[in-house]
Length: 159
Image (cartoon, rainbow, N blue to C red):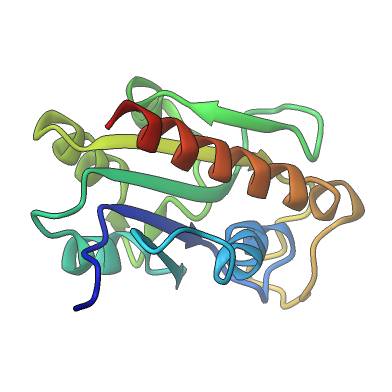
């Protein structure tokens, strides 16, 4: 019998637009190293749409990984509190004009633990195609993977 997933890790962004692909790169590294109870999904630029269809009653924690713009030094990682989400200067927190933060807040209000791990981007190239992360953001990928794994470990130790 397949074990039910209670943690969902979602990578948001678009690999074609520079640092916007940060979340995609992080989940690519996580796919084969997370425990059985964790689902890892690259939602691309359609994070909100996919999340709405993926979350079921088994999901108790969601970790979203995405590029952000908080005006920080490029490559800086920030664990974002759910209350900070509406105030974001956003890039990939919006998919086809479907905002992700209201949905995450709603899940949080229903008892799902929500964590957002953001990386300050340097080069957001949309609408111009430029695959690949800047050096600063690329160097933050492994640290973000560690942060996600720590979130998973902390969640499991509380259960």
